[in-house]
Amino acid sequence: MPNMSLKKNPMPSQEPEVRNKNFKEVALGYTEEQALDEAARCLNCKNRPCTQGCPVAIRIPDFIKETAAGNFEKAYEIISLSSSLPAVCGRVCPQESQCEKYCVRGIKGEPVGIGRLERFVADRHNSLPTENRTAPAKNGHKVAVIGSGPSGLTCAVDLAKKGYDVTVFEALHTAGGVLVYGIPEFRLPKDIVSKEVDGLKALGVKIETNVVIGKTLTVDELITQGFEAIFIGSGAGLPNFMNIPGEGLNGVYSANEFLTRINLMKAYRDNSETPVMRAEKVAVVGGGNVAMDAARCAKRLGAKEVYIIYRRSEEELPARAEEVEHAKEEGIVFRLLTNPTEILSEDGKTVSGIRCVEMTLGEPDASGRRRPIEKHGSEFEIPLDCVIMAIGTSPNPLIKSTTNGLETTPKGGIVVDENGETSRENVYAGGDAVTGAATVILAMGAGKKAAAAINKKIQGLL
Image 1 (cartoon, rainbow, N blue to C red):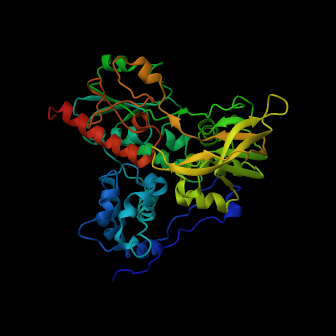
Image 2 (image 1 turned 180 degrees about the vertical axis):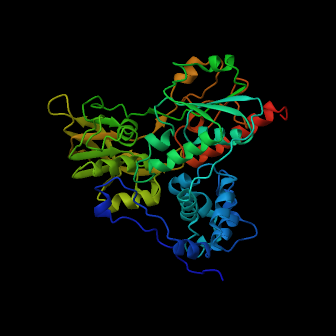
Image 3 (image 1 turned 60 degrees about the vertical axis):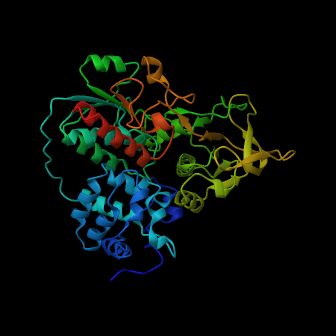
C-alpha cells in the first residue's frame, strides 16, 4: 500500500550547536526503515513527471520502486545507468527545483524525497565490499578530458564504458574539481568523491594531475599526441569581484580561494600547512550556495559573528532553501536588501569593517528578478576583520587564450553547438566552462551529452 503521508521523512542531522563547530557531515542519511517508508510514498505515476526534471534522465520511479521492495542493489543499478555520481548527486543536487518540483505528491503536500532516497541507495552500495571491476576492452580510440569535475568525470565514465582509451588532465593535485575544492566536507565528504574517482580508474581511465592545459600542455599539443577528440570541462574558477574600494586589503578573500584552502588543503585542521584567516567577525557578500558554504565554514573556524550580505530579499536568494535554513540554524545572520559600497581599513592594510547601503526592489531586470535600487541616505557600517566575496565565477581564460579558433562569449564561456562541439572540430566542451557557474547535475548532463556525440562522431554516425 502507498504511504499517503503528506510529509517527507525528515532527514536525521547533527544538532546546529554541535555541527557549527565541526566539519563532519551535517545530514546523517536515512535509515533503512526511513528509506522504505519514504519510497512507499511514490505513486509510480505512468507519465513519470519527475523524470523530466532530471538533467541526466534517471529512471526515478523505477529505482524508487526497487527501493520500496528492498532491492537496493537493483535500485543502484538503475540509477547508475544514467548517473556516474549517485552518492554525490543525492547530496548536492537541487532536487527541489528539478525532479521533486514535478512530483505529483507535491501538489497537496511535500514531494517524495527523491534525493534522499538516491543518497541512501548509493551509500548502501558503497558500504558493501568493493567488487573487482573489469575494464572494458579498448576500441582503439583515444579521447582527452580536460578537468576532473562533474562534467569531465561523467564524460570520461561514459566513454570508458564504451572502450575508449580516456586520459583526464587535472590542473590541481587531486582529482574531483569543484567537488573537492568548492563543496565543504560537511555537505560532501571527500571520501565519497575519492570512491567515484577510484571507480573511474577501475574502468581503465588514466588521470594525470598537476597538468595545466594552456601552460603544461595545450589543446593543439593534445591533438598531435593522437587524441581524436577532446572534451573541455575546466569549470569556472575565475572569481568575480565588485570593484569597490578596499577589495585589495588583507582579510579580503574570494570565496573560491577561501573554500579551496579549507576544502582541498584542509586549512581547518590544526596540522595543516595551508594558512587561512580565523577571523572573529566575517561578512560574506552574495546569496548563492557558495556564499552559504563560505559563511558556514567561517563559523566552523571560530568566528563569533558571520553575516550574509545580499542586495535582494530572501525570496530572491539563489541558494537552496535547505542551505539557507541550515545557515540560519547555525547562527549565520542575514543582512538582506543590503549592498556593500566600500571595505574599510583603519591602518590602510587590513580590514576593519564594511560600509553598506540599504536597498529596495524595483521592477524585474534581465534575470527576471526584481532590480535592487539604492535607498539614498541609508549608509551604515559593520565592524569586521574579514570579507569574503561570493558573487560568482567566470570560466578561466587560459584555455581560450592558448587555443586557436576557439570561439567564446563576451563573458568567457566556450561556445558550443547542440552536441557540445566547439568551433574547433573534434573539440567539445561542457559544464561551467560553457555556462559559467551552475549546478553539479547540469554539468554532468553536459558531459553525458558530449560523450554521446563524441562516440557518434568517431564511429562515423554523425
